[in-house]
Image (cartoon, rainbow, N blue to C red):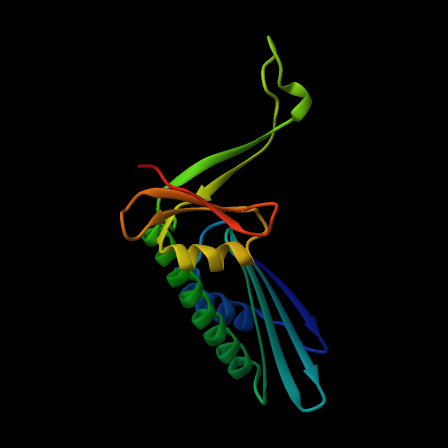
Length: 180
């Protein structure tokens, strides 16, 4: 952990540096290396302000507090950082344990350039994506199609558990392709 200090209208001594380093050890256990810390200590009229910025492998944290004593300001600011670091660490671990979200099987979709189709030519793929296949009724698929930017919806029919396609026809009606 690298700590950089800056002081405005405040006499920074080794005692305050040691106090800050001791307090920051509580925060360090929740963060991933490399950890860079910037501590700004400032006296403004009757307020002693401690501002702490921490950047680490997965993001950054910041806390500011003012008090009558610089130790109190540092203490509260580091406590705030510790809460943020705990939340950040918990969120990261939850995401790792949960893994990627899958709502069902995905089918690959490729957009092929029209001019690349022909005898003896390989089709040229312009865009690729994945299509989620969700179980739903025909009525739910019709609602999904009305909200979709595509002219079709591929779904698993909840009645017969078969993959079906509902599409918009040129005459503004819907077509249904369902395997037998």
